[in-house]
Image (cartoon, rainbow, N blue to C red; front, side, top):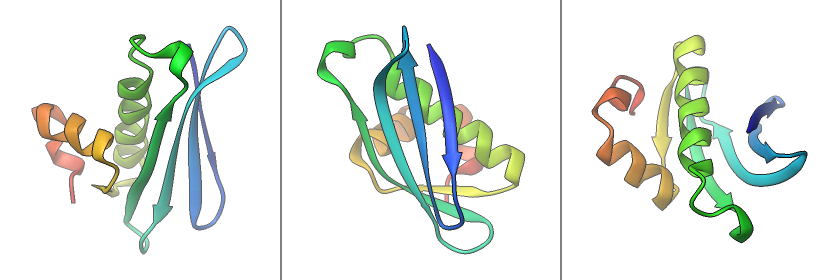
Length: 93
């Protein structure tokens, strides 16, 4: 699985690919200099059960740590992963 983070000024996308095909997409929006909101997470049905969503959340967490930023997970999937993962609490806003 390959994970790409494509960012522009205020919005970004984390894209997961398996065998060259897009498996999932996460969209985020910056809310100021030091926090971003995960708006939407989607895993394409044929890739369900492969941990694609969790890997995209992990990429977002790693990205936030590198940028010294916090994450507000408005997306229900991302919020559920944050709620279950003690190790991500340091970047939770």
